[in-house]
Length: 255
Image 1 (cartoon, rainbow, N blue to C red):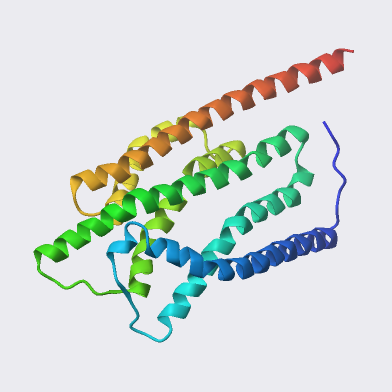
Image 2: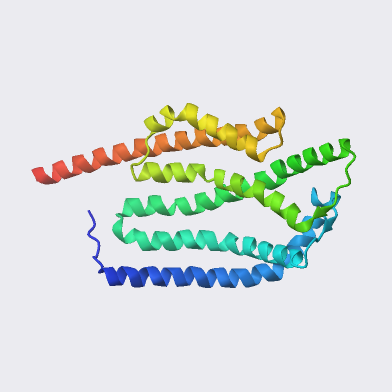
């Protein structure tokens, strides 16, 4: 077992402060770049499906500035979140052995990948489906659609943020399994309750029809099953690693 250098409380606080300042610096730099890129991103969103079918209006002098800042913040989070996770790993890795460090480091790209997949699924599948459903209802009722840009993006973010977070489920399950708070047995026992919760979440963020519910609920349930399978593999590897360490310790004691 590798022995780690101990640090005093003040040294831990100084280390944490340094990590926070680095994350803040990356966020500010990314925010500047995001604000520069925001008009181009808005232009792309405006001229591609499904936004090209909608006329954006403003109902407040602050609406344009609010959306401009929101897009800048969202763009700044894309590089900041992985960097923040990496800084967290650097802060906690001093208390981990080499095997635990490598395992924890793998969570960072995996988390970023899950987030990107979640955002893509929400924007390219669920959001157009929801907008088409509401547009169809308005058309049947012969209502004139006049969308405020703030309401449009609020509707979009209300769909994208929950789904993007839901796609982090495998990362959360693997992490909790890694630290011993979850096990495959618990996940199998909780399956029926998890299914009910995921179906409720799908109903809240999708249009109120069966096909839309299924298109959202099935990927969420699939994520739970993938999480359970990955947790089972990790738990199995942990058990084998513990057995190997026990055998090595026993052999060392005999020598």
